[in-house]
Image 1 (cartoon, rainbow, N blue to C red):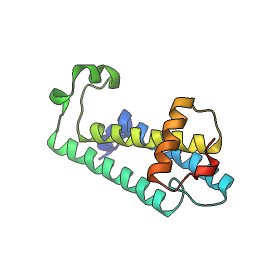
Image 2 (cartoon, rainbow, N blue to C red; image 1 turned 90 degrees about the vertical axis):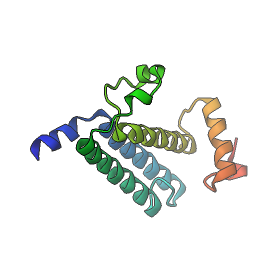
Image 3 (cartoon, rainbow, N blue to C red; image 1 turned 135 degrees about the horizontal axis):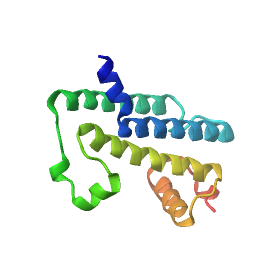
Image 4 (tube, helix red, strand yellow; image 1 turned 30 degrees about the horizontal axis):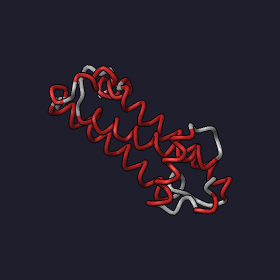
Length: 142
């Protein structure tokens, strides 16, 4: 059991998922303080989503350790150079998707906090938020 926990603690994707969830929560809390309201990163919905991410990535890690699932042959070689992983199981595949999702949420929170975000990213985020969510109002868009 100890070896399993050590292996879990050494998985870089699990570490990244946890780090990005913490960062998104921190920026979400700061945004909630600024806007004096709960938001998608900090509140019951955010807590449920983040807990589900952690639970699912841990379940996938256990599944990978039981069946040794490996998606490596299905990943394009260019993508492998970017992620620099030797083994891509369910944990790594979905974990990287969770990291991308949380990265977008972090950028969204940074933009809504007024922190420096590259203009082209900020504009795309604001347009997306206007179209699909109620987290930004038309009059507050600059």
